[in-house]
Amino acid sequence: MSGEKVVDVARDFSRFPAGRFKEDGPFSGQAFRDEVLLPRLRQNQEALTIELDGALGYGSSFLEEAFGGLVRLCGFKAADLLQRLNLRSVDDSLVREIRSYITRAV
Amino acid sequence: MGRKGNLRRWKAKRIGAKRLRKSLKRLRVSRRTPETLGRVFVSTDGVSGIYMPELISLSDQALHETLAWAMASLRSAFTSGAREVRVDFGYTTGLHAEGMLLVYAELTRLIDAFPEIQVSCVPSRVAKVDQALQHLGVYGMLGHKSPVAPELPDAVNWRVAQGANVDGPKMGELIEEIGRLSSETASRLFRSVTEAVTNVTHHSDLAKRLDGLELEPTKEWWMFCRPEKHSLYVAVCDLGIGIPRSLPRTHPEIWADVLYRMFGDRRMTDGRMIKAALRMRRTRTEEEHRGMGFSDITRVLEEVDGSRLRVYSNRGSLQYSNPSLMPAIHIHNFKYSILGTILVWSFPFRDDQHVR
Image 1 (cartoon, rainbow over the protein chains, first blue to last red):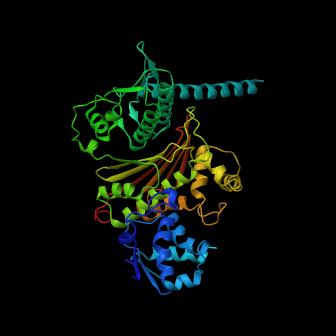
Image 2: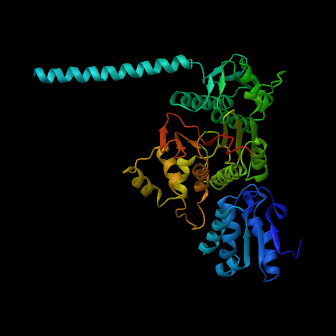
Image 3: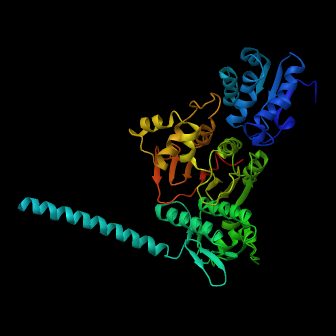
């Protein structure tokens, strides 16, 4: 899997992502951020495509912790992250929501 | 004097009429649920028991009162020192998802907490209830070996899941099993349910449940799905401190102001507290990025036509409907607390919208 520039949430993490923190459950936003997103983002400075379709759904706690957490806790700048992440979904509102968590995270 | 006398007589008549109306209401309630239902019985051979209500439901004042009382009786049966607790479904003729979920959750919790107490049950005489209790595993939980093979749609359509953390696969697979929802509706429902359970896990250690059992707070949740011919019911329950008790703890600085803005005074009732909690969308918690879960819980209603949410928490309830159905939020307050929270979403099945 390493070296790929696409993260498919359903394939690489879970079809049923849920919860904010690792202690909430096995497929939480924090687990996705720390175990899937961070290693890929730190591997190189290139763009990363996140394939969001395929998972059953995403709660706001999961999304905020996974994506907003990159800015709040991991030292990424919102503008850089928005440029590097290519969020792909048939649901435009989901993409807008994730972008808003990144923008608003402080 | 004459006019004052007339006024007094008129007032007395009004008060009399009010009392009469109350007595008649009580009579109607007692006809529907005999005095014994929801009460503890103690037999001479060390068996303490409980007669379950005729209709296991929280959907109106009388039913809520009877079931909340029955659950209090069930807890006292387990702590009465009896060697055996018997749950009598002999009078039960109907089950609603939210009521049955409360019974299921309470029974699971008590049986786990008091393993030394033997449990037994008297089965229902009504086929659909008998089969549903067998299908849900309630008879098995109570050590009753029933020969009944569930086959009626009313019984076999029930689905159940339970867990002690935000177990996405458990909740997601249950939603997918339903199979009659569009992918968009299933996705939004998954979002609502998982956020509700995330809230449960984050608030579980705020305080102890006021049931006198002195058990440690848990993150347990229970979930029922019940597809019917024209609609789907999905219910999630936790036996935590309830929304009305958690709100002042999670939003200590703003909850009273929110009440004031919504109702014009700061008087707390459980119904008002639930409404305030659901309206606190993306408001400030101690951490800016948190406190979003409630908006997910109600968002599905705005996106799916004809959907409805009913929240029962402690002594209050709130009904929130999709604007196309009924543009209103109704709150109610009840006499007894269910000591927990139940969220029930309902969605109409429509061939053009919901069939995959």
